[in-house]
Length: 130
Length: 278
Image (cartoon, rainbow over all chains, first blue to last red; front, side, top):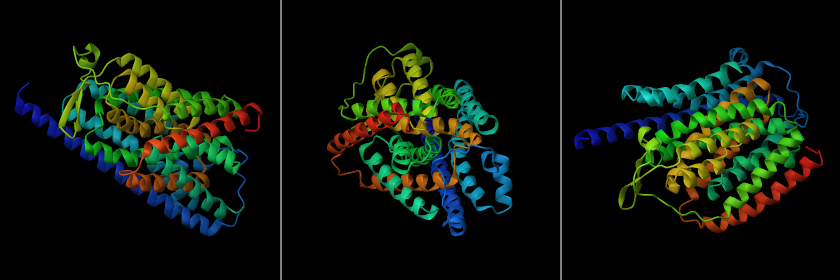
């Protein structure tokens, strides 16, 4: 491998690392801010209620699906806003996998494009299907 | 207890867990579930959901810094994430059919293993010689920064590491933890990556692994915002504080103390699991 190509490759790798780092940081920050804002509003209204978290209810509510959470956010439901922040957090690693997939594709590294696609498929299956 | 009081206490408890997790390098995720179940009497399914969300937050937050420093091996991480995500999906599927007290027992055993690992010293055993064929095909060999400049390392035993990563994924999906201990084990001891590369790449993978089961947990109602939010924010703030304090702290002694605490929690989980209290 020529030296010039190798150093170009290393610089390329470093740029991807910087982008991945920035994406992760931004994702966590935005998710935490959204969830915190929703949480404060939720506590302001329901803070004096006594929850029963020692019993698992598990019945299906609007907070258990992506569509339900988005509907709740549109209706300015505070619990849905918290859950939306949590969904953004779960989506952060998914976005990271998508970013690495694109980076591998730009480098024509098809083996790792396939590997990233398998991981992305497993994540989407969990988040959307289940 | 009102929700406001509960959330305040949860935040403080989770903050402590995140702080200790970051200082010892053992991660805070493993003690979140015992904290919520044993400490606050929360149902283990809600505890697992809240723990998993916290794990995503701390690992993504920490990975952001590590990736930029150039320790993380992106290829190794990406390849092994195939094993951990499929493992996590299997674990989360199985979790629906396993009785809560059995989960508590498995949790206790995993904590005992983590405590034992926490007492061990870590030595780099970088191998040089003829490169591993599979590692060469997958182009896993790389370099990592040292005070003397970038140093090259070779990757070994890819199938063994891949298999161990599947196990780590199953445990993550079943128990709502990051399984960092098993991930590091797979990379450090089986695949012979330098220890710092193993820990940072493990951390890099934890978020994706946890996200794989988090979707299923969300649909099943394990993620209760009133619990998940204070826990997640607490662990995140604790971990960030710990990461800032890390340079200049004697972590070896801290690890030993924390290992004893984790072992005690493990026995408590086992007791509660066997007596059916969880």
